[in-house]
Length: 366
Image 1 (cartoon, rainbow, N blue to C red):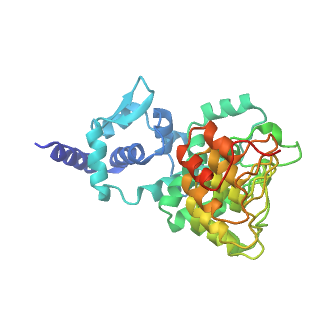
Image 2 (image 1 turned 30 degrees about the horizontal axis):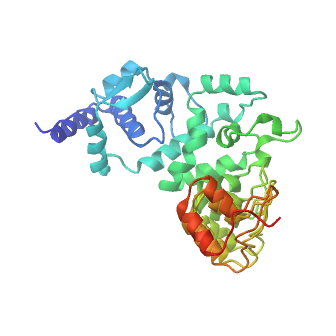
Image 3 (image 1 turned 135 degrees about the vertical axis):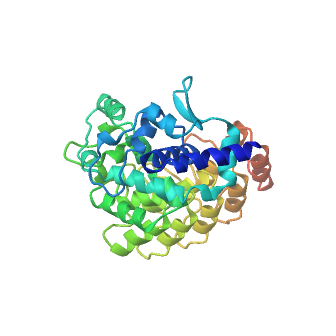
């Protein structure tokens, strides 16, 4: 038999097992094939234990790794060297990718599973006070970190109505939710004792960070958020979307009159600075077309969007910024370094040539 026929026949046997065996076998294949990072056996087994819609997590549903391997009919193995679950061979991934109908909307299903878990009563009551507590918590709740960091990535790819409702439910009780700490990676010390974690990172911040257009739109329509509110670092929803390159979310936010398009964060970076720094050309173009955006606004270190773009070798962004009369190609930062100096330091001949074509110099006049 051809390899493709072997895989097809084996998947047929997995489905023919019926009941929990079929669910576990196909579920394991779906997770390994579509997860955003390699999964340990513990994480995968916890993921497969989730009952959609349940408000409680039943640890009794967690399958053993031996049960899981048997249900998969030899198509997955434990990579002991990496301590991760993986498909038996790279050609199996190619086969699954070539037959997308094997799984029905996998990213939407994964988002639903992650959000069901984050909405569980046991998870909502979790809290940590120190980094040691956080590490211990991750050991005890191995599925928590993946759900916190990636539910939105999956939801952005495929968003079901049910995942949407679960996301909105999560945001209703987002203040102090443990997933905020795991998603942002923020140090616990930044929070005053009387200031709940989540109140410095709200649902609109989260949805804008992930770029989930439908959720951002719904939250704005609900009218329960200050659209210019900064998070723990002063990032507005617009700054987060601009930093991540989510063009449609940026346009939605800029479509609201109350949104300040140039509001700086705690370090003085504007949404344009973030977009330029990360080379998000589409967002830079959108922001430059918006009235009220200063394309040459320096941050607290005196660095302009052009300076950031020059350092990170973003030629198209540099070209767009240099096309604006307001932009000074020689503007030094507080340490006297010009955009050309940043470009030269990091070895970007294309950016250097662009700046020199606008008569930029290596050393500032100051």
